[in-house]
Image 1 (tube, rainbow, N blue to C red):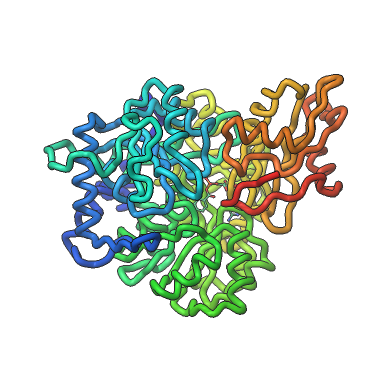
Image 2: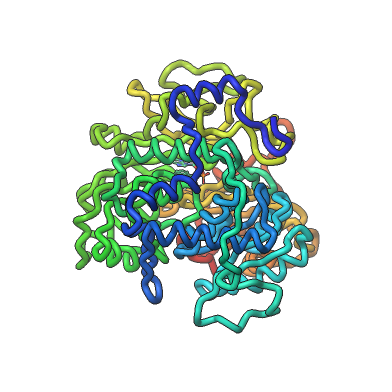
Length: 561
Ligand code: OOB
């Protein structure tokens, strides 16, 4: 057990090494080896603005030079650096530079705002924060300025500056353009494969999100094993359509899988068909990963698109349950194979296989990636359920964490004594060993793949002076799978409109996808036998009643009033 997070007991680590899963290689080495093997092959294509194609040699050199600049700025091995970048080439330059130093990227999403970023910087005790300047109309430099006043550990803000915004930095001097760092190589220690590589974000079911510590050994294993299962090789062209820092497009098999195989990564600035389809045609994209609402939008648009999608071989769909009806439409509409992915940033990833029969592909969420993934399906008392019955999914294995970062109390609840992670998912196992996701026992809302911890939103709403009590629940939705609904009890005599409450949540600095899609004012909550608020009854009420507010648009876009 390290001070910051529990790790695998020695006998497990030995077993995973002996099985050849953990190969003693870091991500920094992986890129170096690729660059030596085929320096001139294109690694990353960033089509936005003036198109950039970086070869493996260029990415490798850029990572080294930026590593030197970061070292010069005082970033050291083991330091945490919050990285909040959109789908741009500098994402890879930054992340590989940090990997080379052994500093840990903390992967934030572009949608995160003051509350989330302040929290990540605080619990990670981050020394630096890397942002874009202005992206999709949002000024990340202003966000960084605000966060900096709240996080004393934060010594640097590095900005990836667009030529269009050079020189207009608010509070100039507080932020260092990434490009201005010195680039002279300095000798430094390289991290070891057993060291932590980065901190990933948990979907969360508690008031504040938890950080997930992943090592080079365990993550690189999941990436290389995913390459085998998804047939990724040096001819693969992967389109990063989802936010690059999310575990799914990063590693399943994602951009890192593609780079590890010597393939080509194409960055997609937005995941809609109008942006993605021309890129697929032009770059001859062979695979990509999407959440279910986007997969639906793509299959609908593909029927009469003028673009040639013929290069596409595999579409991976995961992050939330993909209905069998929608899954059935993928192959006819897009002319490619579907692989369902049921994964989690904590580790375990399940895939349907390319040689599974069509029924298995459309009706299950796949089977575990590794032969050493251990799966248990249990009842409320942790007893194994009968084969084929639905129960709680517990898992342990060569790339599933043994505990969150600096969260001993939470770890005692989220892991069994013998190290199984309690996923909070309700599943059943088929005879073929595939998993079908039947529901959830964790208090979480899955809004088209974007995870919302109701408690986090409730805490913000409770900060409103007119609110006496609140309960946030999931409401079924045809398009997103689920949306969020806040049930609110006002203080006596208080007056508050839904629009004002939603604005309040946004202004408190929560990511837009967490702003409740619906707000219902009620006099009381239903209670369970022991007097707790019954979210089950609230969910049922919400599902039965018509929406009171206009449904917000899909993920990636901000809900607005
Ligand atoms: C992926 O990772 P996270 O960490 O954002 O979310 C994990 C949770 C799972 O515990 C499950 O509740 C849900 O998302 N989930 C699915 C699913 N894939 C994920 N629920 C039903 N069906 C699926 N196919 O979401 C993630 C990480 C790596 C690869 C793919 C997804």
